[in-house]
Length: 318
Ligand SMILES: Cc1cc2nc3c(=O)[nH]c(=O)nc-3n(C[C@H](O)[C@H](O)[C@H](O)COP(=O)(O)OP(=O)(O)OC[C@H]3O[C@@H](n4cnc5c(N)ncnc54)[C@H](O)[C@@H]3O)c2cc1C
Image (cartoon, rainbow, N blue to C red; front, side, top):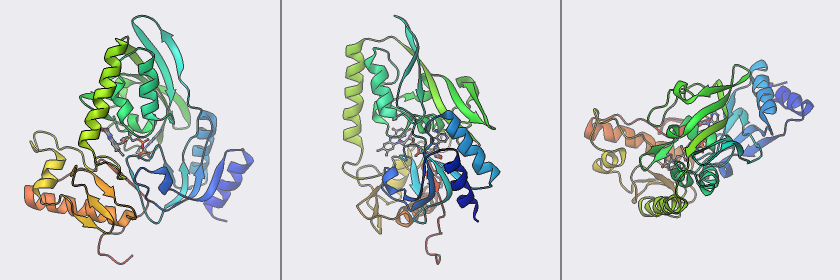
């Protein structure tokens, strides 16, 4: 009996929802990717902790799936368990007064929904989040940001599952930096919820910032094309004064097509799915950009997008 089969039996015994062989493409903004051997949908913190513990006990590989908006899932899919919580999308108000709001939101809540709901209450600081796809947990892992804001600016604490225990970590201990946190490369930590402390703001100004950010998005990003946002991080200023998209553009890659994936003509740091792109197509473009940008500019690009599952080197026999 394989580990995954034993895991399925245990999940069934504990009433933790799961399905076998679920195609993951619909769970990603790229709309690309093969099946999850087991897609596990814990409904609360306890089930998440139980499911995670079972993967460890039974030695079954696991991957945590958020909103799938910063993700390239392999065409072969993901072996073992893909944990994809399905907590109720609700905001827990901890403290609310004329100066500030403290609120806790589950990690599986959609990030734009979270930004919108908390802004509607008349508190400021999360207007930018209304324009970032994905789930709240993913935006914490990634310290997501735009227009001069990052999620770390308004986070008070983070509730995590670490070494089988649920605990709260103050923001100062999360190791946040540009599109990074200490959770990003530590797969033993799962984000369960985030607590925000937001100052009171002027509702009209909050609304106009949300509208301004929306318009800026519409102008700068590829329209009507599936993507995972920026593929590469912008290099630090001491490495290059140019942003990732400028380096890719200068390397002559704007509009380059492999299979049905394309380096966007509208924003060179986006790779878009023109309809039938495979993960192999996208991966080949990522590798091409890395190699060509290094040859032309001397800069080694660092990936922002996360790869899940197995990827063959372009040109190698599968
Ligand atoms: C059109 C478009 C525009 C974008 N614009 C921006 C932008 O302006 N700024 C920006 O920062 N990003 C942007 N992104 C990228 C993306 O939306 C963010 O990085 C987002 O925060 C990722 O969240 P997610 O839930 O989709 O994570 P996923 O893609 O599901 O996962 C990303 C990584 O985080 C891990 N992870 C996710 N949730 C958890 C959790 N709860 N616990 C543990 N690990 C977890 C996953 O295992 C994976 O390693 C954009 C994406 C798109 C498609």
